[in-house]
Amino acid sequence: MTSQKITQFKKLFEEQKANLLYTAMGLTNASFAVQSEDLMDEVDHTATEMEQSMRMRLRNREALYMKKIDDALERIRMGTFGECEDCGETIEARRLEARPTTTHCVACKEENERLEAAHIDGRKSKSLGVKMRFA
Image 1 (cartoon, rainbow, N blue to C red):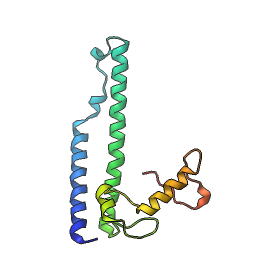
Image 2: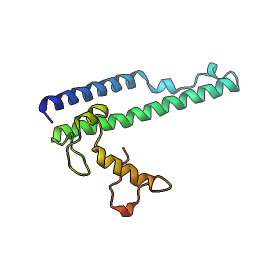
Image 3: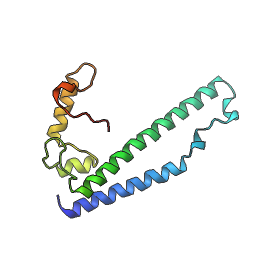
Image 4: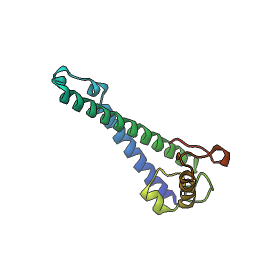
């Protein structure tokens, strides 16, 4: 991958990170506080709980994505951005453009998904020698 392309990805990640941080600053913990006027009746109470639940899920997703961005920036810094972490081959530019934080080439991702589907509970078998990842 060219240094120009890597620079473009780095700029993209830095912009996305800045946007997430800006959004997080706007969504302070006060936005999760329940106001007494929001609890007029059971319907209001339920609606408030659903809204809080959705906000928490959004914050959790943003935190996970922030970790992926940080990991991608670290791979850029280490010079391994764009390399599949399973086979070491170069990840196609089209795949990186579609999913910039990816860490697997198409073939390895398909193999991982096939192995996951082979287990009834969707978990990877520890006996297969496959590295477990949670992010």
